[in-house]
Length: 361
Image 1: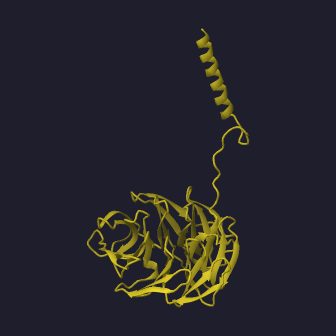
Image 2: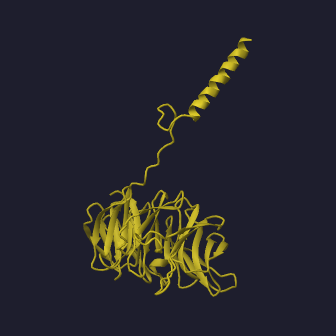
Image 3: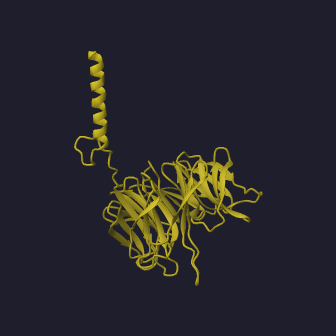
């Protein structure tokens, strides 16, 4: 009898505790609370074209502009070192300059680079000329290596995956280069379903080092392609039938984001969009509209240009423009919900393009 009473008492106490917790307020001092996610603490570097050309420095927590590097030419590319201490900025004349990220003081080094990237886990700056490679040591920025290639390399057609540099050639060719030895590891050509060679427009590499996502163009379609470097096969593709801009894989490797820049016109205007896909199945998940972010003109849309993730993958930045007014802004997207959270330059009087994100210097 005593055991039955004890069991009944325990059951009642448990039920009371459950009801207490379920009915407890958010500010209860007893109940456990879920951890609060903190925004990525770092810097967003934004290249600006036209008007006030140069690089704007934005605090990723407050989304406020901290400083800028003013250029007499258009800043086209920017890269931040893993430790956040250095910046490399390339202009529209093909010259790259290095900066101390904390002070924005220019360092005594310039290089004839088109594309540039600080290599992860390596004290080196890697650059691409039209038919050449360059590698500079960091922090002294001494030239380590220069070499030539038969690829007609363009800044929009290369991406780094782990310690590899993936280059797309004139048409359907992808080459994987070891950035330490400069040895070609893989040389692939991608063909469309009808046997035509794809013309590769943009591409990005998956964190696993095998998968490549590319925008391929041929006579019948514009496709988003998921290609395996190991097997040399297309794993899946999605016909887009639209004008495409850039493709980026999330740092977690779960989603692929593709921009449709939009089509400007004198009497009509198709705004830009961002399409989101499952990185493994190629399934289309949803789109992100860029309509309604021009102050005072809720019916207006923005072009969608370059994409840049925060290192933790929680935030996606998209540089936008409005072609008819030659102005634009940067939008901040929460990748959990894929909702636009912030217009960083609300006055929409800039013309942003390439971006980079790095830690606080």
